[in-house]
Length: 119
Image (tube, rainbow, N blue to C red; front, top):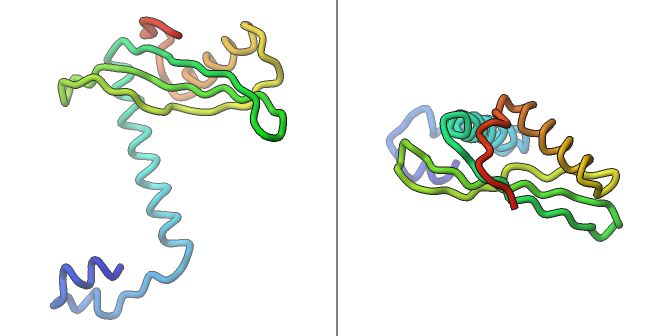
């Protein structure tokens, strides 16, 4: 909030605005996070992407699957690598990993047919 007040010192609205609540930054972050995710899902549906999967065990001995995507962004004409999700696994079998990835992608409207490669 201080940045806005410094940027617009003559603003009557900002003079009386106070965002000290922890709720406001959370709301703003959630909205921005949601919009970034929507943009990513749209880009994924428009291009072939690569899945990078890493299964590991965390400090509490729970199995975790990290999903990273590589895709070509047609709007910026650049390749991108981005974190997609992390999911807890009940077991590390191939079927469990496949089902988890499928559920994760399809739950976000992403097409499994757009997967070009995985590693």
